[in-house]
Length: 435
Image (tube, rainbow, N blue to C red; front, side):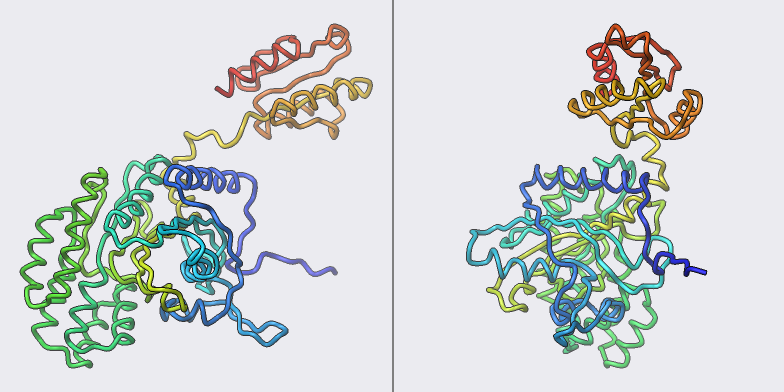
């Protein structure tokens, strides 16, 4: 018996309907590349292991696909794209192009996660990277792009969970907590393991006053932005560097109001992300019906320098295409969206009509119409049943009598209406239908 093969665990086949949905989302992403002037690039899926591992965060390092090639080099399938962006910038843009450099990307990533709802081992990301500016407006532009995408995809309800890594990191730095221990703490915060966070703080002999302040900061969250900033200012009065981070958030919120996106912001001062390269503002996008982030990002001002480039400010985001698609399905957004053009089935009435049907199909394709020529079924009845089951919008029937006058029958599969028309008249019907 031949062996039966299935998809590898955590991987999926994208079947036609889901792939249409995927392309619809990607189309909306590419529209934003254009209107915000981000240049789309493509990068290799396989990267040097050290490049990816350097600042990926412990959780991601543990789930990377790592292997040796025939030259005994240790390589990895990219688990996310930001490290690749930094490498690409250093190699191709740093010396050759003035700042800012605004790059966009779409591609697959891989993590050996436990497959579950909204989590796959192969997944698609799209991203926007604003490289070469420390201005808070570049932070706000990245968040605004994410809000625009959510609105353009017709999400009625979403929120941007907003924080600043500098608030917590500078408190811990003032308590002489080393960077690797900070990363450990942030990884636990990202996973919501708060009890373990406070156990580590005790283990590291953090002062009681600091622990109390951190506990209160973790509680500061919500949509009342000015009140949260006010309360945080009191808590951070003895932490000057953390106050600078808070002031940065305050400025960001001011510009977010000008951009018209402050209504989406959900401020959370005890928020952390699992990646170790963040240096400033961080955020994640949430949709109420999905208890997982569909995207996120932040500022990473030292990453380019870490990989041997010049000191370079940068901010960006990554959008989980699979999760956005899942959220659109959950909220039934796709039920109101036409995915792709009207499909048209051309049916030759008999074998003698096949050359004429081929001629007509070519003329319609030259006009950009979505055409399938029926060559499988042996009766008109079966062909019409096929058209109905496959949701063809129109059927064109090429029969001897009409063909003598250079005409054919066209049937609207929605209404059932059928008429005899010329090619020009049929084209007008199809144009009206698609407008």
